[in-house]
Image (cartoon, rainbow, N blue to C red; front, side):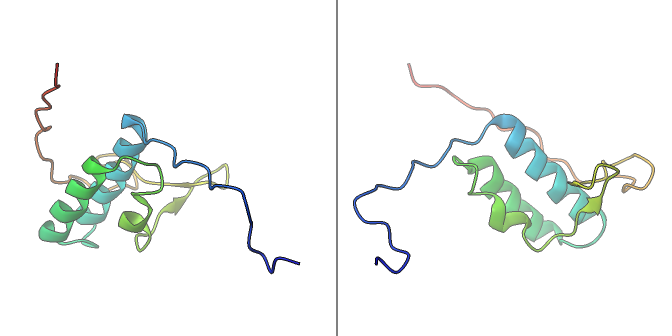
Length: 102
């Protein structure tokens, strides 16, 4: 018996986060700051961390304490800023200029 410990199997590599996954987290953060659940300083800190996320599990702590709204298909969704039921406006930072190495 191994008491729940897997011996001899390496853990699978962490999956890389896509732009769409980072964008979803950023939209949740924007809604939270527009609702007053985050202050602008905390929003900036979490935004920087979301933009720097390399794996899909990295942004989870950034939104773990934020409330999402249930949707019709029983999944949790975020109301988009400027939509009915969503906040009227949210702070926005200009996109970062990314330079690629050649």
